[in-house]
Length: 161
Length: 161
Image 1: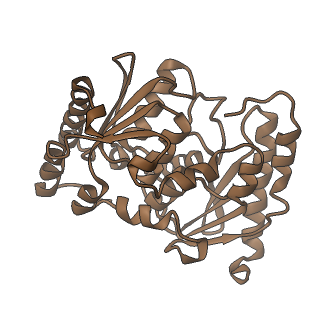
Image 2: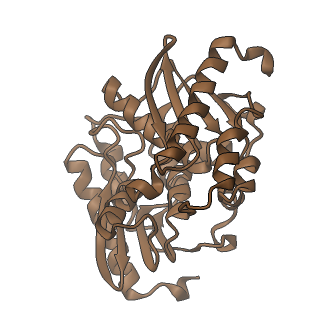
């Protein structure tokens, strides 16, 4: 796989790692991300969970939100995402929804776990059946919940994604 | 499991479904979420992906961000999250990071898939090895990426989460 990594990829990945280092000095978490299109940086993001009181403010989520705002689009078509660390399931999910063409990361989720982050734990929880998860989870009103989907399905004018 | 669902749970879950219906009328996606603490609504959220050009603006992520801003905390201790639909991996990951005490949802991810949303596809991708995923994914500079973690590990004053 390393064959598909260019020097330019390494350059942007190193930038994401440098952002992670800088972010620690600003009181944030040790994570950074860079989004690139046509070899130019569109936006960057760092981890501001505790600094912004926002558990979703991981580096990749922040970078995606910044890039989408800049591009005025909800899709990152043709973009590459560089992250200092393997995205957690939340960020990986966000990346799938944003649909970039490529993801390059440096540290692994096990590296992240080794310094106290829950990434591996959450990766283990996601594929489990809901009654097997550590988080108390229940389903109810499934029939009633089809109402919004029924309206959505029958709408002629809607933006699908 | 249904034994653990109270009438109050159903009330808040119905509220999330109603938000989903209302949100379609405002041009958003068919999803709503409600966050409750001590039997009071702390915050709500709806899907504004296409309306806000933000692929992360799912109902649960929006509700979590709103609730954390209101509570001025990055954790939703003692809170319950009600979602009109089973959270996608991005939102489920966000819920794990926010650490509420309970999650209650109505429609299933297969219901969501049946009206065109990628939830099931992303659930299938997350547990795969990176070279087996549909998204081109590469790892590089793993050694260099340990630098921010090394600094983090050795810091005495830091907010862990």
